Length: 344
Ligand code: PHE
Image (cartoon, rainbow, N blue to C red; front, side, top):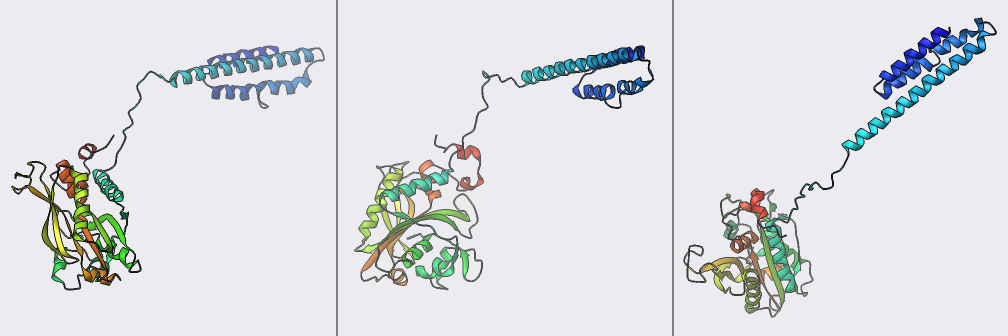
């Protein structure tokens, strides 16, 4: 029995020595020291031994168990130490390594230009108003003096959803809504930036979806000279104080008289060049005095109230300001194009 115990001990210690992971150590512990292990088994058979032999073998069996348990513990600790060391080596952070660059984004050029336009008009006391992009025929056309069948509706080819609903073709309906929400005596001083939609074929200067900023001022005694003053201030702040403006007669159904505003060409300073097609001027927006019918439909008495309105395309403003030659750049999202206009 004694030999058998010593043999078991040798065998177990050898296995502990050879074990390479904690799982095998667990297995060894269970198979040698567990309730069904050979040593426990032998202790159960001790009853057959003589009275002298019993304490000797009992002592030995305990010693063997203890030795195996100690060897297992020591090996377990060793393996854990090795694993810890390996992990520490793997997870060492070299604080001297350069970090991965974090790319900082920036607002889209169109967002920046819209904000710039908004800021200029907020500075002149205008409020910002917004309205729905899916608009009723009434607000998009009728309330703006464009009854059904009016030929001037053709100026704005539209995406209809139903007979009465369409994607707004301009932001003017927001003006009609804003006036209509007042009681017919409150002054209005607002701009409305937003997306608009027209059934156009996309090319360098046309897009089926683009943005507009329109403005409206209604009060007593509003005159054409007020319009000119506001537009002049806007143009000089946006394009530089050396720019001149001029108003040319034009036609819009919702304004009378109507004008288009040009600014003097920056490239040639008015002398005429390819950018301004030899004229010295570049058109930037439409405007006019609000038509009495539009005031009346919104509940304002045109005998007492008058107003001016204007509308511009921020894409066109940005194209002129930064010399961009194709409106599609705003929508195709080529990051190389957009990055040039990120303000740091
Ligand atoms: N709504 C016009 C357009 O989209 C622009 C405009 C607005 C013209 C206000 C005059 C006055 O073409």
